[in-house]
Amino acid sequence: MSLTKDGRRTKIVWSFETKVLDDARAEQVLGEDVDALRLVLNRATAEQLPSFIDKLRHLFETSKKSRAGGERTKTMPPIMIDLQEGARASITGLSAPKEIAFGEKVTIGQVGANATFEVACRQWDGLMEEGALVYVGYGDAVLRVTSVSQRLVTTETVQGGTIYPDSDLHIPATRKTPKLSDYKTAELDELLRKSLDFLVLPGVESPEEVLEFRKFIATQTVAFGLAFAPWLILRVDSVAVYEKLDDLLEVVDGVLISRKDLALSMNPAQIPMVTKEIIQRCNDHAKIVLTASEMLGSMRRNVTPTRAEVSDIANAVIDGTDAVVLSEDVAHGKYALQALQVMRRTIADIESRTGEEPNWVKLAPTVSTEMDAVAFAAYRTARRVKAKAIVCITKAGNTALKLASFRAPVPIIAVTFSPDIMRKLSVVRGVDGLVLDVDPKIDDVLPVVTDHLLRNSWLKSGDRIIFISVTISSLGREASNLFTVQQLA
Image 1 (tube, one colour):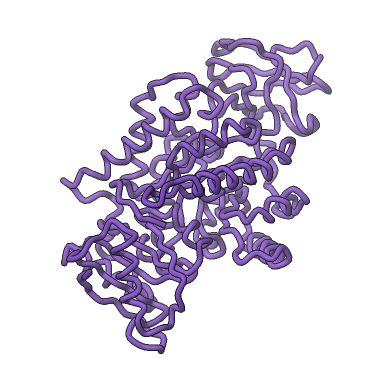
Image 2 (cartoon, helix red, strand yellow):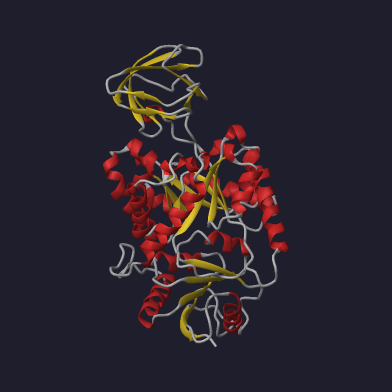
């Protein structure tokens, strides 16, 4: 793989719902440089996902073979399957947007119930209860249930707005905590066989439940003859998950902050500071953190984003997120490619401004292990000697994750011996990957790495780097923890 330096360290995750996946979408992905794909699992159309992944791999392999020897080879972005619970109900049969006003009486019913809005749902019983708030499209409008009958619910509008066709309905008061055991299905097995990079888990509150599911995934990975299991990303989507975050971070590889779901279970005014806190806690634990929810969502219908949306991306970058997640809603409209361009430009602009230290620069993090001590010392040295890059040997990705958690001002090049690990690290902020097909315990690993860097990266002879090894030695056959300042030659 050839490393590039385009000035952007914060990564971009492109999201799609299952129902928009087709051959044309695969061709579109081939034409764009993104850091990861998030495919939102819809059980009704889950059979489309394996074939879409196969189509993508075929396109990228064909493209690789057709490129000239000196041309940069495009690699397929890592695949992230989101096992989110999804909306339990959605409006159906509405032919055009409809305005509702504060105080207006609105009825909601099953199909054929002669209601203001008919809904399609997985299960009507238990969906509504008297006094519950019904959020239409995460707050386009808010209704309060005043009465419930067998097929019809009467509500009063407490926040007016525009109701769009196919809007989802969310009723936090009747939501049940998801169970990971419900996802042990034939559909998931079929996806695991495709050698996924990440699984995004629904927001569960029990570390023990996550550990049990991790063991299940590991068992299936071995059974399918795969080298590595997907990394597990937990959706932070409720107050209960947020309050148990420190315990949950011990058993997952990262989190996805679902701010729109969080806003249904806490005061929306708290979300900005809670997001900053979660990002910092993930950095403290050296875990991946993805910031999601309605990122450029208005670009589903408008070619120009709102100022608030652009500021939203900028703040996530300043706060230290690993990646921003483009809203899956955007893929339903005409401006998905324009939205990607807006994200790239916004990230590049924020990261290019060096007048003040951003929020994420950590001058005195907690150092409690050997890895912490070596990694932080390497990070500080890189700042002081103005190194062009920090280069680390990492077998499973842990060293690269620890270095990245300090949000170093220079790029991190993770030298690994597995393409699977390199792909997973591609969503980590500031990290590029390089795969070596060489025994990591040989005495001359440093010269070999140096040679690869000069041939396959943007680094050049004379550049100063920090070389770090926490698990193997570049000077001998014994394990050691060390870093050195090197000048490429």
